[in-house]
Length: 152
Image (cartoon, rainbow, N blue to C red; front, side, top):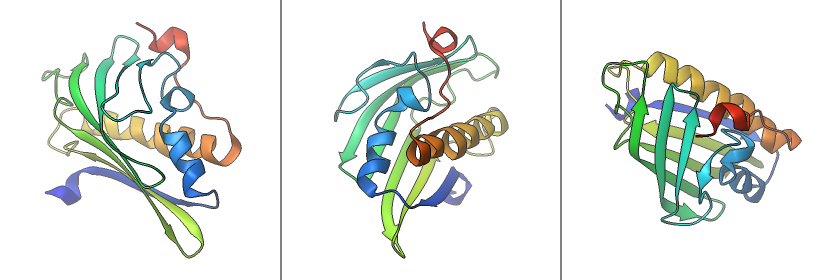
């Protein structure tokens, strides 16, 4: 079942330190209006995408330059019948080195094809991770939701 979780990965020339610094700054790649603590163990933050998605993430693992885990402790997705589909899932960022490059693997554990939001949520993650986060790491500029769209 774990191979059905949403997963994406890519290689970068930047250091594990640079990748880690970008991950723990989701305001620069996910949503400018994020409220809360995004860079401390046990920190909690709220992400909102208009009226479609609001979720609270708790940082349950934070290993400098290696791993970050967000547990979704509350979620409401307005566009599906089971509004709290994300609640209890985890977003896992794993940083490693291979062949002189930094590898980033991101898994949304629990976001599986059986979820009504799987297609839309996977598409969102593909953009925010493969385009926005990767852009932030490679160029210093991500493409997060603007504050007006993501603010409460």
